[in-house]
Structure formats: C-alpha cells, structure tokens
Length: 216
Ligand code: DX5
Ligand code: ZN
Image 1 (cartoon, rainbow, N blue to C red):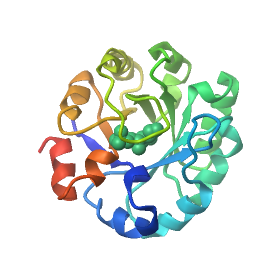
Image 2: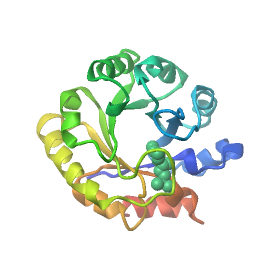
Image 3: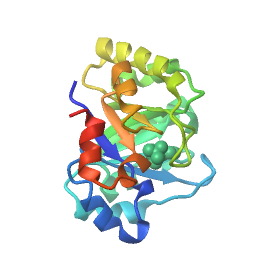
C-alpha cells in the first residue's frame, strides 16, 4: 500500500509556522489540529491560521476539527483553504455530522470522520460510503506527545475490511503516538495515512524521519 505521512503542525514552532511547514515538504499532507477548548480541553489554532498557511505550501491541508458542532464551521474551513476536513462523530448528532459532510462536499473538498478511542468502529458505518477518509485516534484527542494505544488496532482492522468492501478509495488515517516503532503496527493493521507530530518535529533530520515513517 502507498503510505502517506501527515505531519501535525501542533508540534511545530507557532512563531515560525512557515519555516516549519517548509521543513515537511516531502510529506503528503499538512495535518492541522483545530481545538475549541470544549470538545477537547485544549485550545490550539483556528480559521485565521489555516488562511495564513494556505499560500505557504502546495501540500493538501488535512484539517482535523476537534470542535463541537463542526457543521457550524465546515464551510469556513473549506473556504480558508482546507483540502480535507474531518469531523468527530462524537461532536454532534449523526444528522448534523451528515450535514457537515454535505457542506464540505458542496465546497468541492474531501470530508472525513474521526473516532475517539472509546468510540466503536460501528459509529463509522452510517458514513462509510459518504466519506473520503476515516481517522482513528490512537490517543485521546487534545494533546501531542502521548503514548500510542495499540488496542486501537482491532478497530483499524475492522474499518480496513469495511472500507475495502464498501468504499475502497476511502483513506484510513491514524493519529497519536505514531513514531518509527508504532508506524509499522498501524500500517500492518490497515492504516494508509499516518499523522505524526512529535516524531516528525522532534527529529534532527525531518525528511529522513518522514521517509522512515513511510517505511522506505
Ligand atoms: C492530538 C492531535 C494529534 C497530535 C499528534 O489531539 O490530533 O494530531 O498532534 O501528536 P503526536 O504525533 O505527538 O502524538
Ligand atoms: Zn490530529
């Protein structure tokens, strides 16, 4: 499988975002963690930052919305320059998550759903045929630098089976605690997009670390 790497700029230097995004030019996506202080305890970055970084890179922006009621902001994140917008299934009713997906598609962008560690794979089923990406959290969302949860791999395996059967073009992404030791575990379980924050930005040689995560 063709493995994609999505470095999370949560671990970048926010005073030097343009420089730190240039440093990951060999990656596949720029992963942007948006946190509202309600859905998760932390507050990170929002629309103005997505807008500001958009012209600094040719890489697609993979915007991970850790916010309540994501349908309220889905269109604005698309217009700010997001290429992929992912919404947590826990963040609203299924009807409103569907509305968010439709809003993202209406803007011509890719839509995804995200599952927290305690959310079962079945929560993805109502959306399986309607999204371009499913993100399985391998840590509790909210903070970088946490430990990978290997017990999420059953969920990844289940989703990989369902995706292959029902929506093979859909990407399967993992996020949290991915490093050169855990990346092969996630890939073996069926993930094809790996988010990595501290493992990328903590590396002395970032392109080499991205290549190592990709397995080449
Ligand atoms: C956590 C974020 C992650 C985070 C990953 O809520 O969604 O994207 O930046 O950081 P690492 O790779 O350090 O676990
Ligand atoms: Zn994330």
